[in-house]
Length: 155
Image 1 (cartoon, rainbow, N blue to C red):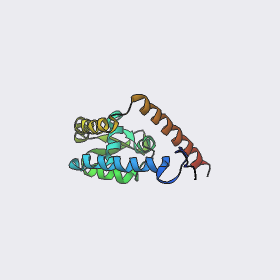
Image 2: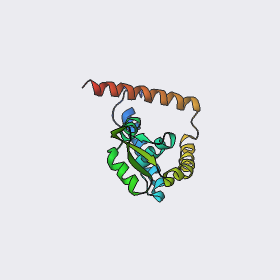
Image 3: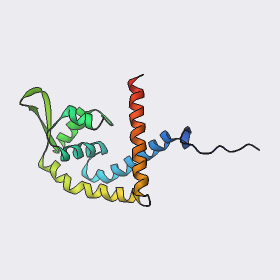
Image 4: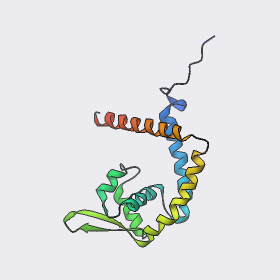
């Protein structure tokens, strides 16, 4: 009889951490997309809005850095957000090479509408998961991201 291997975090394939994180990301992306669809927004629009709700008037490059360029080119995303009347961009008066991004009133108003919707999804997602477990999971993810970035830089 062959002994069955114990599940370890180093497994590959469908039981591996990378695969599971990818599946979680895809499912969460679909849930967020469905929640944002009535507002003609994408999950990446949500991330940009969140960034600007915290600090309006950021340089385009600063938004890209804060979001680690997750999911698409910043210029294209901002173009579509500008077309939808959520943001506007203007040159920095002190450095004409820099474009600053500002929320319109419509973009600011979304800051009252969207967070409760996303919070409801988050509450459902985290139901039955202890706070300490979430903290541990986030810490492990941060370390894995840090390690992966280091690996990517040294390739």
